[in-house]
Length: 244
Image (cartoon, rainbow, N blue to C red):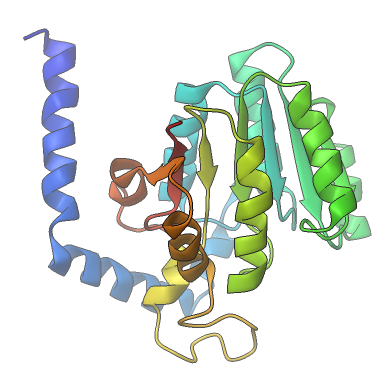
């Protein structure tokens, strides 16, 4: 076997065996809960903008973008802008005219100012509004209609109903072979009541929305290798590939 093919073949086998290791997954969740005492995911920036993610997820997202080579990435949830700047920087590396459309119900002035003055801003457009509203969905659809390969990251309100609505609307914009990336599915694995100051909880979060969405949709399937390869991840089962 070609040595490069052998490397990736062996890696795939190792990942598949790791996915079956329930003890390792449990230890990973324990580590994530402990690290969250210190707001661990707030520790990192991407090109100077805070990116509230585990570094492992950033690496996997990089792999997905590089493999798919989208010319449009739609992201719901902007916050400080680290994720849309990350996506824009990946599109810059890919070349071409790829754009990021960031959507948030509240783009705060101090974040907007820093994003608009960032070197990657030429590849970024932002829309303020409810990601599930008819107006915003229509705007996203207009962008998608002018693009060949569309990828979607859904990271706004994490309640079941909101995420399910996002999945139903934005899945229609994703092109075959591309992905929906759905962070925060790990909420389902955290203790009930953990997010006592938030509207989401066990039984009401992106994972439960994902399960209901997949029950009624055969165009997407979970990419297990990407969803579990990092173990320390906010997105178990959260990398959905459009297969038809």
